[in-house]
Image (cartoon, rainbow, N blue to C red; front, side, top):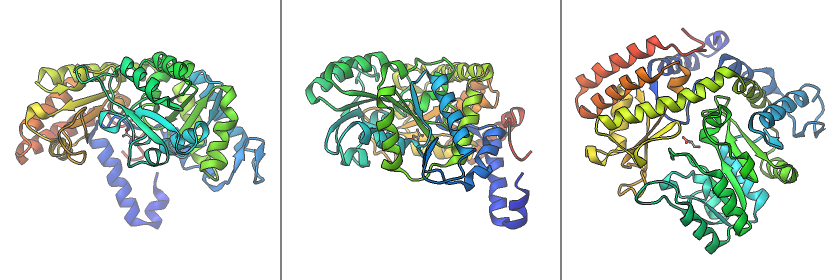
Length: 416
Ligand code: DSN
């Protein structure tokens, strides 16, 4: 692979090689990242990048759609089947764009929307004030229960009754517990709101049957396609049939022009993969690995927000280690363990240098790592944390990281 780039553009070629190597030689624990298959990468780089297809299958504004219509229809049908949805729109360019499209489909500017506040694990597009979703809508934000660091459904219901939002958002980017989508659906119904679930982080777990599916309980569901779902960078919106037209219209022409057909092709391929038994095994192993990693980290004295995890993600509170997230994340990165620093609930520190670190197990699970390797990762984590200022200790940990990675090669790397 990359032969033509090598001939044509040495700068980019060298950087691609370095990035392939970085991904091979590091333990990638950012919970929203993964490794896609060669088939997904081939589809992403296919001739479909050359095609414009404004509109939807059988209703386009450009000719030459003999193939694109078939590909997009396959992606739609696979998405519907995998998640049990009436309708799927596979055109959103990204999760953020999908989410904004959902609000514009179900609310008017100035209407009240209600989602989990970003410092408590919500996404920017769940109504946080610096996002367009917090500026164009009247966003009210729920938080986690201060004692359990879990969603407090009674408090959410109370807030919904008080504010009567048009849209209630369930879903998160830094929440490690099972989300009760049925309860969210009931709350939305009670106050006459639409229930919008953003399942981006856990879509792969849902496809694998390792987390409850929001589709039966939500009017509309968005997801990115590249996190635990292990597809290309893109997004989809699923909804009940009665909302199909408004969702499609909100995406095109509401938010976007021409869909990225190469991405849609790769989404179709990824959804095919996600319906296999081996994907189900991967999804279940992601959860088992996260549980084991959390347990081992707690044995090393790390504080885990909410005391553990039910999904792919672990949020660590570093205050008991007397350290802020950025410092540890940078030391870990030097050792080849890639994480992201993150706010914790009621974080006393600033968001750019918060008290937490967020980790997850999708990428290491894709490499074939299991519980035994989670123990090793926890040990390495602990080693780096105890020696953040010690370059020799970090170099020593980096060697062990490389050794571990070499035993679990990236399944479909383009470079060996
Ligand atoms: N940036 C993503 C994440 O890392 O969770 C959310 O979109």
